[in-house]
Image (cartoon, rainbow, N blue to C red; front, side):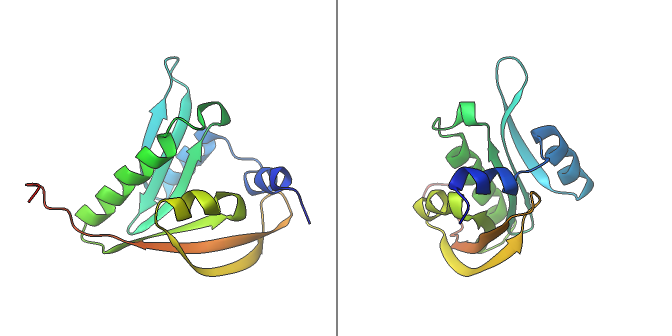
Length: 136
């Protein structure tokens, strides 16, 4: 069984934030990006319809709450578009993060990753409630 680090490296093999953002733009994803004081991408989240397609936080920015903030913004946008739930596909290493945000595993399966390892992936969902903008 591969180590969590080997799984992470295989899941993200060949991807850079810049290449991922270009691919997202080509596929008409909505993306939100966080940059540091030097203009470097340190986190991003993209979505299409009711699905979060990608969430990335640079290891140096981990633990600062950027992933949670980007997911909240994505959920707010998804619900404002009339969807009642959000979907996301996650690796095993990200499962705890999403479950901590209220996501529930609907389905799991193995797939060949970009780096060649067979990895376990999980499809998760979270019901969303439309928020009243007046605060009532």
